Length: 174
Image (cartoon, rainbow, N blue to C red; front, side):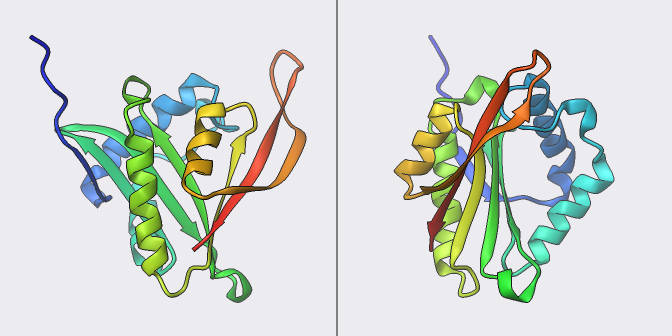
C-alpha cells in the first residue's frame, strides 16, 4: 500500500527554514537546466539565505514562500520587490520546485498564493519574470495564471557545448 503524500502547506518562509531553502536552491541549480546560474557560481551561503528571508519579509513589495509536504521542503517562491521609487510597483518572481515533486501542482499552489498576496498588496501593480523559452511546463504554468509574454531574448545564454538558449520575459498585472 502506497502512502499518500502529506498535505501541501504554502507558508511564508521563516529564518529557521534557511538551511532547507539553501539546499533546495543548490539542488535545482545543480541540475544545470532551469536557471542561468551554475551551482558553483552561487555564492550565497546560509547567512545570505537568512538575510534574504529577512529582507523579503521586511519589504512591503517582497515575499518569500516555502512549500512543505510534511517535513519536506518541496518548493520556494520569491518576489523581489524593486527599490527605486519609479519601480516599487514591480515584483520580480523566482520559483523552484524540487525535482522529485514536480508535476504535482506545487508550482501552481505557490503561484496562486503569491498572486493572492500580490492582488491584496496596494503597492504592487505588476509581477514579472524571466524563464527559458524552452521550459514548456513553466511557460504553460505561468500562462495559466495570467502571465503574458512581453519579450523574448534570443541567444541570451551560451551553453558549454556552444549552443544558445533564449528566454522569455513574462509579466502579469495585479
